[in-house]
Image (cartoon, rainbow, N blue to C red):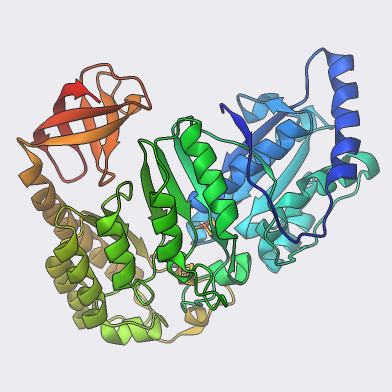
Length: 476
Ligand code: SAH
Ligand code: SF4
Ligand code: F3S
């Protein structure tokens, strides 16, 4: 954790955290006097980049209230577990970690444990946490993230456990944030999702779409560029529907074009796009941009029209391939990545082969693949013809094998070419190398020591499906 920067201005949230912040500061201040150091906060994050961005705000609010960062859960006085509910495995992992914290609470009865994020928004999980995890002090749903000061002050002053879901649908601005990096930044531009894909829990746990005002986003990004950030990713479950229905017609492509006008040496990315809403105009703005990375994450989910309809995705193969073709035509160097679900209820061998054939046509640079996981309360949970586990596993393996070949084929032509890379410093996987990412977000390894946050040109010597290796030519 590095810098504390106040995030942006504005908006109509009637909630005023000031009295709660003051109350908590009094308690953390007294703690610091008694112990000789401030109480410590540990934030553990599961799930997607939205959660990573939310955790930066949880940390920001805690530090603002007088906590200091803990190196691990063992030394923390406040633990916030930011959970994910997207698949069963994600929930199991979070519950298992929360279970392990029981012994910390036994050792330190004053320890406060809060469960935040998407799992906290599921009623049955709140009931389970309340009943079976008596050492959990509160749950905090994502739409009430900015109420952390209130929850904490109620917990600390009244020893009250809180298991309600304050899910008012506002956009809270002015929440302090502690960014995890001094050169890569996440900027949420909208929250929630309206799409109700039949397998997905997100619309239930994150609520309906609401967008931040363009001026607030532009001010935040401008501040980040001025502070030296080099790689900025705009976040939303479906950024293509940013400000959908707004009277002035200002939409995502307009925001991207406005952000691209900011002067400086930086890359602009965005996640995630929905194929039904990705427009040619957006592609045109990207192609004409100065800072917009030629990288596009466009989740496919399935290559079978029948399954896409059952998933409630509102596009078919032809539409997907149309927008993909337009991207490749306008930006031949673009890297396109995707998400695929295998083993959706009713998926036949033919449906699955349709997915394989689409992969061969689309030639993605990378995919995230998932085995279908039934989510409580979603339409797909009750759909007939579940695919047997062994068949799901077999399809998953075949999908990965094909995609590995495709990705290797996509990367091979880069050998002998120079790519611009933003260094992340010494590689975490192999300390003999430095690592970074290029504009297409591919991982590049090199031997020369290049400080994190610096752009360099790397000549590629070797390419594999998941990474590139090369030699630094010059610093830029
Ligand atoms: N909003 C993003 C996706 C968020 S979830 C989008 O629409 O692109 C990330 C990915 O998890 C999804 O794209 C999907 O491939 C996968 N996923 C979501 N629900 C799932 C489920 N119930 N089982 C398996 N994979 C799922
Ligand atoms: Fe889930 Fe679909 Fe919304 Fe993505 S677009 S978050 S997959 S409901
Ligand atoms: Fe998980 Fe919530 Fe993200 S369910 S994937 S953390 S939106």
